[in-house]
Amino acid sequence: VGASTIAAPAYISEIAPARDRGRLVSLYQFNIVFGILIAFLSNYLLSGIGENAWRWMLGVETIPAAMYTLFVVSIPQSPRWLLSKLRKDEARKVLTTINPGIDVEKLMLDIASDDVNPGNEHIFMKKYRFPLLLAFLIAFFNQLSGINAFLYYAPRIFEEAGLGESTALLSSIGIGVTNMLFTLLGLFLIDKLGRKTLMYLGSAGYIVSLSLVAMAFFMDWTGMTVPVFLFLFIASHAIGQGTVIWVFISEIFPNHLRASGQAFGSSTHWVLAAVIPSLVPLLFSGIGPGVVFLVFAFMMVLQLLFVIFMMPETKGIPLEELSKKLIKKNM
Image 1: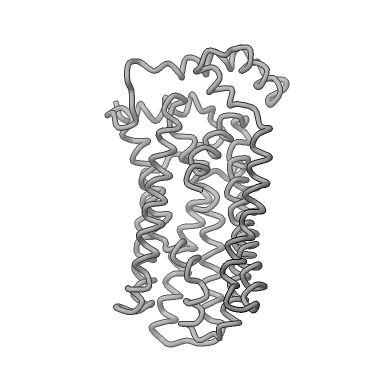
Image 2: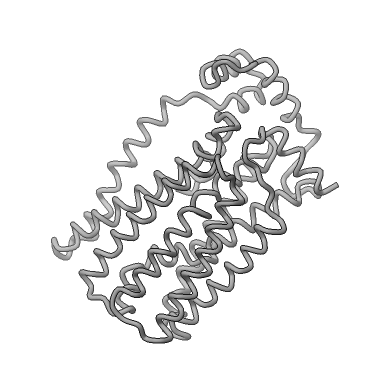
């Protein structure tokens, strides 16, 4: 999973036309949330088969993994990677296939000029400080929303809100459906409205929904109140951070450093995805879920400030032109 979050968004961004890049890279996230929905559904269906249920829950995952392995063999190499290895004829063939009707020779010249690596450049050089900071912050705020903690512990959170065990598992399926539908909506909007607009929508939704969830726990609201607020939280994540994060990180680094930049952003994301969920049960027991969700809401206020004052719009800009603009911000 960690390797795919580096390779897949970078690969899709390198083969996609600038006008469709956001939507095509977002398909990666859509397939993730579709998989989450299938996992919630299969877990619910398998939960009643006895003490071996967990083995079946893990075992069925081999089916999509095997399908993924078979299909990935047939995809072509990235034309930008081929050009970096001086395999021009192969790159020309791939570009002609995936971008019919464009000036392939001009595009190859643009890619080649951006792919020149003077010396031993790396992403931690001063000139790349701004895109590096952008990658870190979008991954940081993604996890400080509490999204992975919530997805991991959704049934327990629903039980804390007063739902029974069976209803809590069924509500988890509702979370998966909401996540998938709003990711699909984000997929259609990202190249029309832009990355920043979706992040504005998502940040506002985060702040409202997380504040309402915190209030529900403080006021001891019961029934379906908390699940409804959490569905709003999931919708806000799906249309904002969920749709944007992998698109954005895959766009902001130059060709010869894209893999390194993607690895940095992905590593930040997954380290926090391991640390924060591991702390949530302890925090729930120690300070209570209301305070935890209030902290998440405050972090989303900071995310909104990041979007307003720091995050650039990348919609429709060729990768080579975009990397030059971001590097200039460090000059």
